[in-house]
Image (cartoon, rainbow, N blue to C red):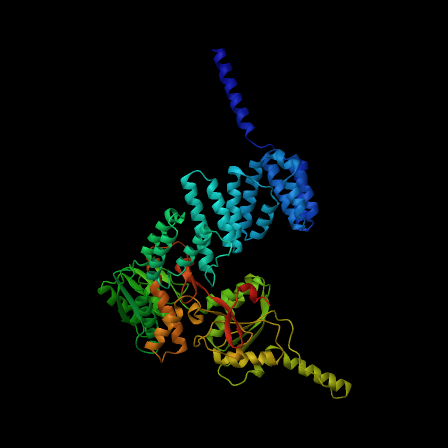
Length: 620
C-alpha cells in the first residue's frame, strides 16, 4: 500500500512538472527594461536606437518565438530609419539562423497580417524584401501575405504571379481551391473598384492574361448580364485548362443565376401624380430601361406600378393594393415621410425604399434603403480632405434647410478627424453676382478697410490690391450648376487659385461643357460621365424616347436603373460590407443597417469638361 501511495505521488509530481514546463518563464527585469526603452525610442523616432534594443531583446529572449518577434521588430525599425541593408543583415544573421526559419516565418506572418489590417502594404513589402529567400512549405504563408500586399497596392499582375507560384507548393486540393479563391477575390476587388477595366501587362503570360480577362468580364455583369454569358462561354473555349475552370467558374455561374432571380411580381410605389410626379416618372423610365436592357437573361418579373401621390396615405393605400396584387417585393416609396410610414407597418415582404429612413424609426427585417442623398458625396469629400490633410476650411451654402443640413453633417465629420469649419457663408441662390458674399467670406472687406486706414494714417493715397484670407485649406461650394458658374470665376477674380474648391455632383446634362467651372473638383456618377460600358447607349435610348427630359430627371433615371438591378442581390440577403459593382449611380455596396452605400468618381473641370482623375491626383 505504501508503494502504491508513493507511485501515485510520483505521478502527480511528474504531471505538475510537465504542466509547469509549458508555462513560459516570467520576464526578467532586464527584458522589461529593454522593451520599455525600445518603445520609448520608437515613439521619439529614434529608429536606429530602437533597432539595437530590439536586437538585444532577441539575443536574450527565452523562446525562439519571442526572439523571432523581437528580430522582426528590429528589422521594421531599421526600415523606418531608411536602413534597408541593416534590416536585411538582421534577418540574415547568425542569430536569425539560430532562431530558425519556422519561428521567423510565424513572426513575419503575424506582423504582416497586422500591417495589412492597418492598410500599410508598402511597409509589409519592404519587410519581405529584407527577408532572405524562403523555400519549401515555409514559403506558402509569406507568398500569401506578399500577394495580398500587392493587391492592396493595386498591382494585380504581381499578385497573380505570387499566388500562382504558391499554388505549385500546395499539395492538398482544398488548399489549392482556397488559393484560387484568394486570387479571385483580390482580382475582382481591383477590377470592380477602378474606373477602368484592368490592363493586361505586355509581359503577362497566358495564365495571368486569362485571370485578368475573366475579372474584366465579371465587372460588366451589372450593365449587361446577357452579354456576360456569351463572353464567358468564349473565355472557357479560349482557356480550357485554366485553374478558374474548376475552382471559380462554377461559383460565378451560381452567382450569375442569382443575378437573374427576380421575384415573380414586383410592385413599384412611386408618385405618378401631384408635385413629385416628374421625379416618379423619371424613376419609372429608368427602371423599365434596366428591365429591357438585360436582354434574354433570367426570368423577368411582372412589374406593377402603384401611384402613391404626395401624401403618406397614398403610399399606404398603394402598399395595400400591392399586397392584394400578390406582390413578392416592393420598390419604393420615394418620399421620406412615406418611407417612415411604411416601415411602421413592418412589411412581411422585401422592401427597397428609395429614400433614407429617419433614425428614430426602427427598421424591419428585409427593409433596405437606397437614395441619392448628398450625405454619401459629402462623406467622400471629407475622406478626401482627411487623406490630404486639409482639415480647416470654409463652406459656401445656400440659405434654407438643405444648407443647414450640409453644414451640420460637414461639421460633425470634420470634428471626428479633429478638423473644423473656420469660415461659413450663406447665400441666396439664383443671383447674378455673389461678390458681396465672397468679400465677406474671404475677408476682402477687412483688407480694404486696413488699406484705407493705412492711407489715412500716412496722409497720402496708396495703391493696393485687397488680399483674401490665407488660412483656408479647402472650400466647399454647395450650389447648382448655374450658381456654380457664377461663383467659381469670382473666386478666381479674388485670387483664390491655390485653395482647392470642392463641389457635389451636379444636376446637369451629361457631357455639357462649362468653361466657367475650370479647376473645380467634384464627384460624378458613371451614368453622367458615360465612361463605363453601355451607360452612354442606354442614356441615348432614353433621350430618344423622352427628348424633353430635364437634367434632374436623368439622374433619377439612373436611380431607377440601379434600383431594379439591386433586387436579385438583396433577395439573397448579402452580408454587411458586400461589394457589388459599378452601377449607374456609383460603386454600390451594402452598408450598415441595410443601407446601400455609393461611391462616386472624382472629376476635375478642364477646358469646361469634367475629366475623371484618380483620388491621388486631387491633392494639388
